[in-house]
Length: 317
Length: 303
Image 1 (cartoon, rainbow over the protein chains, first blue to last red):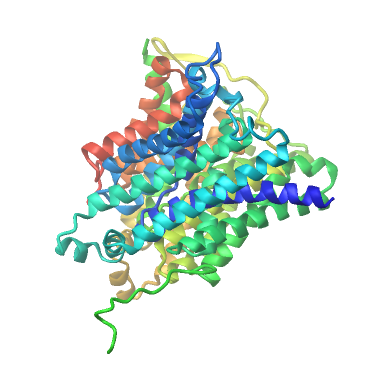
Image 2 (cartoon, rainbow over the protein chains, first blue to last red; image 1 turned 90 degrees about the horizontal axis):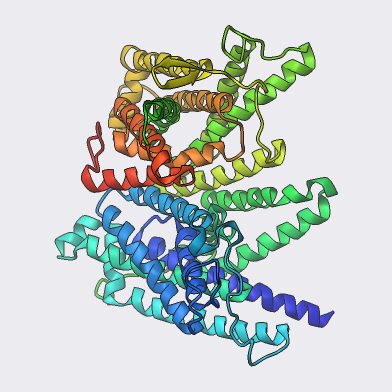
């Protein structure tokens, strides 16, 4: 019993922290820079598929299957997501802000389409199986493997968190917030807004791609239905609930919303009659939607919220 | 090979996209945000009409009837009216509960993400309530006739074109000849100035929801009539809708209409070349091409 609970806790933590990674990426986009990305699922999918294609063993009916080391797959995942973001960003980031929302929505739909239909590369609706799991050679028991994996993921999230904290507190991060608050003022100070936005957009998408790879190597396979727009919505809800503009908020929001998601799923399974079980996932979405709307209306800054930063020169003596 | 038939298909597709996109462009420019739930208004219209059909069948034993070569008769008018009224009410409800309170807080992006959430929740509710299987208003398989050399269309498809044209003319008259229409156009230009003239922007916003919802409902019913009714019907149309709106220029009704025809034609002409499975990506390519070449769109004024 205790063992089961522990095993579940490990599983829960890995998934929640994978969401936290994607949420940290989105926080760099939206929280720090004010970039409205509605295509989170697309960038996560690019990362997951890239790493799967690079590291999975060769298969006669599929291209790729290079069986490269997992670490190479993860780096490749981040790079591939970054390249896609760079392309989308170059086209949209100098335009009206909401055009980015529509373009990122479009890229997510298109990536989903490619995942389903580009069968020689992605395996189509069945996806790619046999994505290698780290530590499987070292630890035989699944629980031991998961414990090793959760340790790795905690270290990874901590590392990304520290790096992002460093970045947003650096002069570079200050420029991002400056652009978010008043683009004209930032431009007047000689900061090319489009360049900074493109940098932030690419970097955030790379973190999302990494999240995709972390997910793929935990579950062991990737399939198109893991990257539907519900994923984008979950990550957004996590950021809004946790507190946009605050990296600790992004992580806390991911854990809190994922807990709520799994709890509402369990509750619906317990309450609903047998014949409606298959449709209960639909109601889960509604629960999360209501939570998001409530937070937006009642507590827009979220659980933690962004710390107010005042220049030390402006402080009274 | 691309033939005349593909052009006809593109025209019909463009007309249904147009009904949705014109409503989207109005709410976009008048209410001031990209409403990702607009696709679900289309889905809602299709399912509300289906429910009305079931109610008619259960209470009065009516079917859809038959008008000449069309696959439906006059009860279809009741379906359309029910769908338009119900969808307009849905759009008003969203505006009242979600969008207006968020607009008052001045968080434009909160609006977009809220509409994204509303879209998912509504889509899930539709799948929950009506089930995920495709449904149809009428079971009969419509007969396509040759109207031009090499072009075969069904009577229902011609009806789509005629009804769309009629609704666009009606919208044109509303926008140009009525106080409401002038107020709507004024609100998209300058809401503060509108308020100064003594017109309540909230009233204009509500009417915009009614008109956008009504047009979306018609689009949904027409797609249900000529293709099929599915919970993802509107969502899958959302990218073409946004592409049409941006191609046409946000707020420009005629630009959006031209954009819709362009997107519809591009999708239909691309199908023989790249296969039907990549159709949705065509709208995305059109969107990106316009953003690169002319980001204000055909009839737009600001990028």
